[in-house]
Image: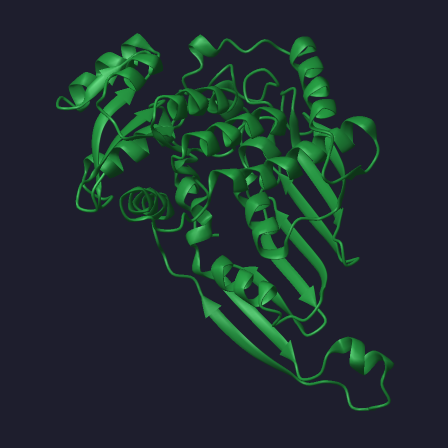
Length: 391
């Protein structure tokens, strides 16, 4: 593809988020792309799409889309379990892939799609749109650049993912091990888990408590607390829930030279004049002073930014905002938390992917059976605004 050509984009799975992506591309809001194909396995939905997008090819079978020659790249916006399978077939068909989060349900399966991407030589991206947020970009720069000194502690309370029972009742694939592969950690919090590790790095140990159906009639967790340790001895806590109302969204990162707090659309940075460890063991009686800086959020449509970046990466070789293989980090934290909760023991990273896969399959076998052929969401859009929230 030459630099001036647009990327012919196909979208697989035209539910809520798939529709949002389709409208962004079709409406001309994503430079360098043109919507040329849509795919949804629901015949009724496929007929609707033909009316809504009369000049776009519509398929009910992804294999037919892959073989059609109508696209250069695909966006996968289907239920979680199908992400690796569809991505692998797309790579084998010579197509670039942008997967919705999470890239899969288990790391064992997700690694197969990463391997397929590498073998194909095609672009592989994941929709971590919150990486475009100015506050998180700045937090990463500060932590990774050493402005906070040595990491001591990170605490993220992200409990404003509130969901009513009607949300879970809106599709029988929701909140089941066989349908979604997990609860709040798998469905609502992947962006936060990704940002947590993107800013602070991956821990070496995870211990977690995941309460199943604590606030809702569901078979997966709706309340979770992770405690992690980093290689340097620092600790981290991650608390999330869909049962708190009103909820909290506060990220605090503390180092030996200061701390960051992100809350209410603002990043507050406090930096010390002297490293706290030096002061602690020194003889200077004067406490270190600190300077405070405040950074305000800027509104941006992160989904469109990731789509545009994906297209530029294909056309010009730009670095991806979130490479597909980076989705393994977030998924590892999620899988490790589940395995820890199931076994009652801490999990060292890198973890045993096969042990997790076996434990997951047992829960799928004994849990409620999701009928994925009837999985279309029917909720009233009450939670749609959260897709593009600038946290």
